[in-house]
Image (cartoon, rainbow, N blue to C red; front, side):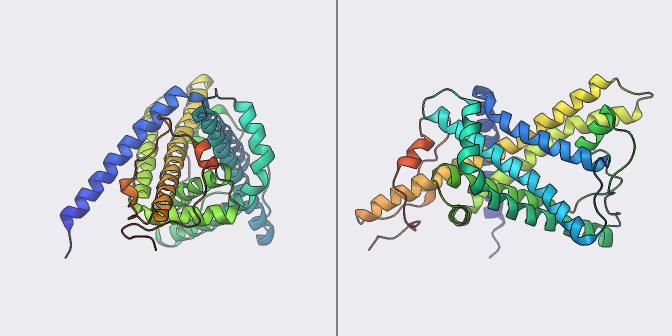
Length: 344
């Protein structure tokens, strides 16, 4: 039977969890603002690529194989920069939870030295899927949405105003990405953020980290839904000031001085970085939660006791004393025990 009330209760619970997640992540950010610096750096890479492409600083080859290769390279630069920034932030979290002060350059150096090779296949697969989804969205919009494909760029002179409008997404020539594709891209990004802690905290190889992240996602769809809601809410909340500004700007007779557009660009960087930061913090804590639960159930299995469901295990947060370093030192369960039965 269709349980409408049950669905409403689950949706309400997911929304409540999402609101709590945002509040928790922002509290952590207030205590340790340096955590967002690596993500802000990756936004700078994104902004540079977008502006270079939009204002045709570099010309993309019209020959399809070369066009495809260049597009893949661009997406790879984006995914690699975000992945490395996330790993640096995770390394900084380990510093904090180990009782040390944050050392940004130490985290950057250690990440570049130890994790660069491991993150390349993750970033490459992410780039391939992202490129495929973007191509599907463009085709669907052209065929069924009545929207033209996005322009390959414009040759006008770059300015602070033009750059701000481009980075804020207010000048897309009528092109709008398919909503389902946008949601799939967000889900893909959340999954990658669930993969990365396995690489840097438990020293897994890329394929092992992907498999482990998949098991985590399958074990708790509700938590993933809460993360998705939190991400969408943050994106919406941060876009409202921009939307109001551009409504005023479009009705304003004349032009704003450059410093106004510089503020808009800085706001775009902050809004994007905070949204990605919230996603990353939630994924990292979900990873910790699953690891603690799996280790606890492995111990219970050794004592021939009933195994616990995930929800019965206390959820760790970065605002308490549970440390990512303890994960690295803890024995790794060979498999994820299932709840509700005795081990044999």
